[in-house]
Each structure stands twice: as structure tokens, then as C-alpha cells.
Image 1 (cartoon, chains in turn brown, red):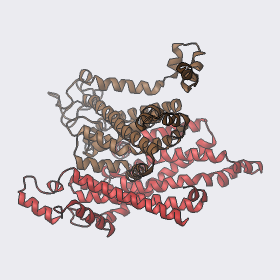
Image 2 (cartoon, chains in turn green, orange):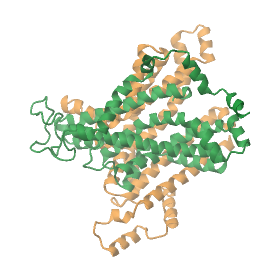
Image 3 (cartoon, helix red, strand yellow):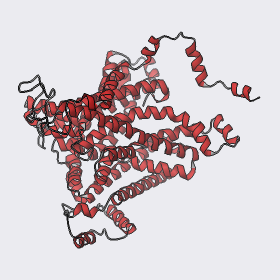
Image 4 (cartoon, chains in turn blue, red):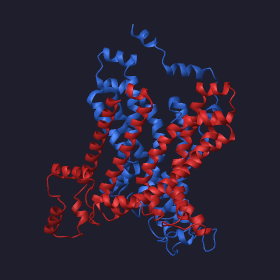
Length: 306
Length: 306
């Protein structure tokens, strides 16, 4: 009677869906549950990054023909309508560079977070589930890597490896995986003692099967919450590396290197080279933080205080 | 207690061992350091001579032992450019970094602790919401961008403060604010949650029931106990600020350790970079060890359960 066995355990998911079923479905409910503010900031940035080729008025790496260097935005004296947010030290269009810079920030932010999350979750599960010397080795490495301030470690790796966008993705992944492995290991330690895991082991499931079918799905929520917290950190770290000249190499437009380019003209008051890229970083990171808070409340009430 | 001390000290040593191994391996895996040192287009025999001079022609284990010996004798290797032990350079810059880090810690105290206490005492009031916004902005505004905007506003436009360099207290305001900003937000969050926890405790309820005035309960009973985790975080933050203020020190031309690291990157001075990163790791492992031992001394639960 396999079918009755399958029906007896009432999973958390069915309880939740029954609860939801009692409320009549309305589209307003869906809208009310969405995090409006973070999405209102993030969605335009994602669209801009995706369609940068069509939106940007100029090639971000080439000077505008006939334009002067350090032209101010169009509404200021000396500005002109062909470069809406002014030009930089090579008479390149600041607006186009900002648009393509959004692409760099978001790609590095998302990809770096995925690398960090994958390494950290995998090692956290292995340490927690296998225990013993595997646990010891993984956790001692985690401790050692946590001992370095993230940015100093990233600068060190970037100096040694050499700059390129994908190198930065891997470096930031290698620097920020440690917080995942700590949290995930802790969760696996308690999951390992739960009945469904024990039963699966008694039924003869292999370790790989237990990890993939029973452990991994149960820690994915925490991974998602941690990821929403990591992504802002990774974006700021990329901007910092690019600012120092060990991140995304020129002439590729990254917000951090735009800030570095604008620094020399700060003293004469050319504010647009400094203010706009920073606002870009601020808005994207702010939106990911807010999205993270929302996710945390929805997915994992225990992590609310983090 | 003795056993706990032994175990924690052993962990710290293992952590430092893995850290040194990581740093050593990264430097050697990512290319030949000699090509960074020699002029481009140098002849092969010149490269060999340089390699022999710096001991880079020896087998890796021998080089590693030399590296560890350098750490133990407190020299941390010799800088390519300065031709001086890295530790001499490091300790020359340390007072400057300490000055900046102390000022930044003070600023983070002045912003973070009062705001955190008010948020906790008046939960969900407008004050609390204001505190939440400050905490959110603290994590979202990159410190180095804040520094650039401060220079723009207070030096370039208002002419109130000097743009960079070291001197009187006026030189210290902007860099310490830019550096302390992020840490102020994290102190705010921790003070708030720590105060909330203490305010719910039995002894605070008892103090209230005894009829003590509200401010006495807050100051003498709640605040004192809530301060323990806050001071711990501040201690770790101070050490991180000393070693990781790279961009802030570059922007404000502050002659500290962060700027030494930056110079090391640009002069391709790998022993200098490697030495500073190692020293930063050692300091952070030490402060964590000291804090753990102090906690265990104060609180017997910690030394008995682990």
C-alpha cells in the first residue's frame, strides 16, 4: 500500500498551501506581498544592464566625436545636449559609461555571490553531514580565511592574479564563501539528527542521495537569505577593487574605476564624475539590502536578527 | 580553564598555519614573482641572479620554512623596493593607522551607541525607524564614496576642511567619518538587539518592580550589560580598521598601513603585500583569541560547554 504511506505525512508545504487556499485569490494580494520599493529600484537597473547596447547613446569606451573633455551635464553652464551627464577625461559619455557600468556591477555581484554560495554551501554540508576530520579540516580553513578582512584578502588575490572581470568574480567568490559554510554547517548538524534523514539512512540511501535529496533542499532557504546579504557586499568590494586599479581593467566601464577617474577632477569641483557612479552603487546595494530583509522575513524567521 | 586555554590557543596556531600556507601558495601559484620584480625584457641570466638573490630558486618547502622563520623572527621578509624588513615599515606606519582607527572608533561610538539605545528603548517609534534607516544606509553607502563626497562638500565647495594629509584635528574629521560610518551602522544594530535582549531580562524587570527610576534602570542595569557584546565588536573593529582602511587612506593621503599596502600593489612589491596581509591576519587571530579567553574567564558556561 505505497499510496497510503505517501499520503500520511503532512508536510509543511501542504499546511501552508491549505492555509492559503482558504483566502480567495486576488491579484492585489500578490502585489501587496511583493517588496515594491526594492523591486522599483532593481528592475530598472537590471533592464538597463540587459539592454545597455540599445539604451546607451554612445560607445562607452570611445570618445564622443567633437566633444570636449570634462563637459558638465547639459543643464549646467557649458553643458550640451549630446552628453546629458557630461564627459570624462577622454571626452567619453558619462551616461553611457554609467549604463554599461551597471552591467559590470550586476554581473560581478550576482556571479560572485553564486560562486561564494556554491562553495560555502557545499563545504558547509560536507562538514556538517560527514563530521569527523572532514569537519575539522573545513572549519579550520574557514577560520583561517575569516581571519583576514575580506577586502584586504581580495586586494591581495587580485594583485597576484591580475585584473579581469571573471578573475574578480572568482576572487570575490573565494573570499566570501566562509560565512555560508559556518551557517550551513550549523543547520546541517541539526538536520542530520532529524527523523526523515535517519529513516532515509536506515532505508539504505547512499550519502550522496541523502545529501542531495534531503539535506540540500532544506538548507537552500538559508543559502538564499545569505546570498541576498552577500550581493551588496560583493558589489561594493568590486567597486573598491576597480577603484584601486586591481579590479575590472580599463577601458571597460566599471563604477569603481569611474570614481577613480573622477578623483583627480574633484578638487576643481567637477562633481558629476564622482556623484553619479556612487549613487549607482548606493541605489543597487540599498535595493539588495531591502530585498534581503524581505526574503529573510519570508524564508527564515530565525535569521531575522542577523 | 587550563584545558580550554590550551585548546583555543592550539586552534589559533592551526589557523595561523593554514593562513600562512594559503598566502604562501597563492603568491607562488599565480606566476613567477621575479618577473614582477625585474625590468620588462630582462635577460635570462639577470632573472636567475635576482631569483638567487631573493632565494626564489630553492625548493618550495625550503622557501616556506624561510617564510615561517621570517614570521617568527618578526621580520616578515624584506621589501623589494624599500630593501627593509616589512615589519619595520609596518611598525613605522602603525601609529598613523592607530590614530585614524581610534578617531573612527570614537565616531562610530557617538553615532552607533546612542542611536542603538534610543531605538531599543522606543521600539517601533519614529526614532527606531530613523535608526533603521541609518543602519541601512551605513551598509549601503560605500565608505570611500562618502569620503569623496565629503571632500567635495567640505573642502572644495565650503573650504572648511583640508582635503588630505596628516596634521591637526581638522585633518582627522573626514577620514575618520568615512571610515567609521560603516562600523557605526553595525554598532547601532548590535546595540539595539543587545539592549532589547537585556530589557526583556528578569533582573531589569526586578529593578523596575523595586521602583527604581527609569533612567537608573537603563543606565545601571540594562546599559552596562548590553555593552559587553558591543565593546567586543568595537575591539575587533579597531583591529580591522587598522589593517583594512586601504581606500580611505589612499583618498585622504593618510600615511598608514593601508596606503603601504596600496604602494606595495603598485610597485609590484610582493614581499611587502604578503607581509602586511600576514601581519593583519596575525593581529586578528590574536584579538579573537584574547576575547575568547576573556569571555571564558568571565563566564564559566563558555569554558565548560565547548
